[in-house]
Amino acid sequence: MELTDDLAQATADLDEYGYCLLTCPIPEDELHAVQKRLAEVMQQERDDGTAFLYENDNQRVFSLLNKGTEFADLVANGAVFRVMEHLLGYNFMLSSTHANVAGPGGASMNLHADQTFARPPWPPYALVANSMWMLDEFTDANGATRIVPGSHRWNRQPDYLSGEGNTETVPVCGPAGSVMVFDGRLWHQTGQNTTGGEYRRGILNYYCRGYIRQQQNFFVGLDQAVLDRATPRMRRLLGWENYLSLGMLDGLP
Ligand SMILES: O=C(O)CCC(=O)C(=O)O
Image (cartoon, rainbow, N blue to C red; front, side, top):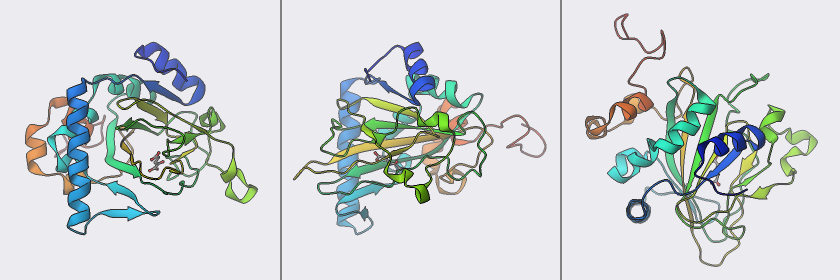
């Protein structure tokens, strides 16, 4: 798939294939600041023994909003926001934000759809959607996210008992700064990193419809300083605004 900064093309790609690939929507210096901060946090968590390491040298870094001011602009980025709104509608929210790093020798992840928490039958639209910010160039060799194009239209998770966990996938490759936005029904997985020394760093900003429980509990875990800095859009994304009659305070929106 071609990279695009045309949002009409991006939403058409999402409808047809279940994903789209956006050209880097932030200035280069902001991308560098995010890369630098993530590298620092990864190292810091390895040094202090709190790093979440798995599959050889893969690493997840959770709760990014509490770990650097650099990450907020990605969460609320305008281009991603508009494409997400196409998928998730009125007053959608941030579900979680974390980094997933495929380290050298890291194994691939099981093929899955992100809305597996919902019991079948699924409605004919996405309940959640994800965005993968590629902080390094994503290649077939370094573990680029692999997908089954068009699988969002099957509207169900893979059936492992019938071998669908082995459905043929394609890697979604792009230069550093590209963003893949994908429907919560799309079958996907982290690729295997077969390189000897490359780290494939990606940030997953995951969103949900306004009536779905968020993956991360921001009401309990968000640092007050993050909320103090939050723009109106960010407060809404975090769940600080009501969705119709949900999320009220003392009977009022
Ligand atoms: O890291 C990736 O490429 C995909 C990660 C993923 O699918 C997940 O964390 O659920």
